[in-house]
Length: 255
Image (cartoon, rainbow, N blue to C red; front, side, top):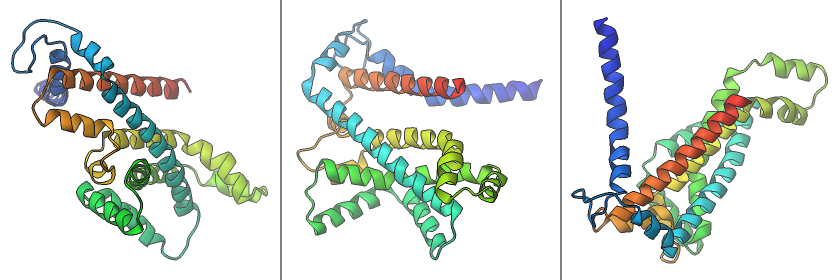
């Protein structure tokens, strides 16, 4: 009885630690005061001001478009690499696998500096293209590892049976492997989308002066202090993310 009570308290404490900052942010997004230091009554004017800010809406649209394109590109590249690592044996396979792990474990500031140096040396102007390429490089290893874990967990007899029946490699990939790894592919896409739309450090180095996305916009807004409109923006992003996760969970569960 005591053990169960301690476990329940531990779980409650962990959830409290994780979600109390989000709850506080959402509550103070309805604060009528001009600062987040004290409560001055309930209002929704910050949400109205938020949706009237054209620069903020433009930055949000850029971030959503960028995250969707980076997630899609990362998912395609990561899935192809995962299938290649699982299906075939080639020289340097361990090097490729180790390189993916290095990218995942490397600090973002190192990746940002390295990428901006490459773009400067190649003469590529900083902007949408450089951010998209950087986010793709940053995200696709996570997709590869997710899909590869799924591939290693299914029954290999399905592939061998298909090969015995005369199926080609293309048919095996299209009709067996891809349908089996679709949940992992979808999970990798969501992970890439989240990582892309949340990234600040790499985007700071490779975005340039004339291309501002939502994370950098938020960073510039909070440098002078936490304002209620920032709380409203964070609350809106949280509810949008929660809706996407809930929808994806229902779709996967229904399937």
